Amino acid sequence: MPNKTAFVTGGTGFIGLNLVEQLTQSGWEVTALHRPNSRLTQLQKYPVRLVEGAIEDPASLDRAMPEDVDAVFHVAGDVSLWSGHKQRQWRTNVEGTRNMVATALAKRARKFVHTSSTAVYGMQTGPFDETSAKLGKNSFNYQNSKTAAEEEVAKGIAQGLDAVLLNPANVIGRYDWGTWSQFIRLAANRQLFRIPPGRACYADVGAVVRAHLAAAEKGRTGHNYILGGNEASYAEIVQMVGKLLDQPTNTVVGRPLVLRGAGRVSEWLSMLTGKEPRISQESAALVS
Image (cartoon, rainbow, N blue to C red; front, side, top):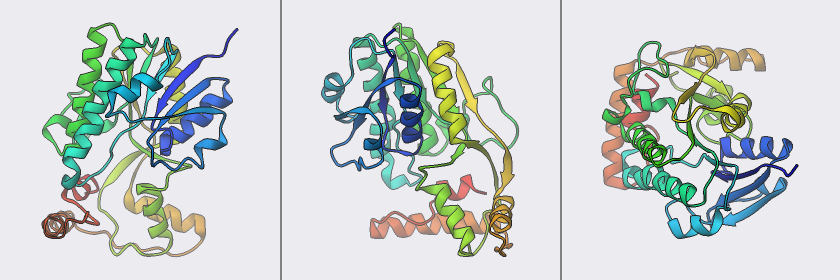
């Protein structure tokens, strides 16, 4: 029996690398899309076919995606929380998803697994599930763009695409060189002047990628699946880091109004400098 085939976007990123690892270990034949300037050191460790292209470029997708592929895993996305990246983020998250859907239909992909986010449900203050209203379209640009991307997938489903939508919460684990690893490093080095006052739901990246494989095998067309885990405050995360390292950590929690004010000031300064702020209005709102 021949191995199953997969086409993966975002394979050089955090979730994508973990997914490629799991797919290859499970016997899948993987084609991974990468940008011309991507760092391939980690991805090249796995037996994958590397193809150059970009989800914003339909012609490159047409060349890269195999015919009759068993599963397309669309993991790539722009997770910026700065308004200065609004146009870039829309091109990647919305127009890129539109291109992926069109190419998957043209190539007769048997399954389309779309990596979305719990951000599509908006700034929730209480429990929510897959039946809750998607309020992300009326929120900041990241939430807005991820919600619009889901609408592109829905259009594909109406045209016959067998697609499943996965909504991870805050994912942590191996190959994360970004937000959460930086937060933990700052906590470990006692470089957090104030601990963010909010709390969040966390998902282990290993569980998230296993859910991707399960979605390809038995996910129901058009359904969302929230991939959550334990909930904790940022203060509890910092305390846990200190306990694991057996060292004291900062215990001062910042005030939400102060944090959001800092975000507004930083955004204003970024308009003058053209540089991305260390804290934006969106990131301040998310952690408070």
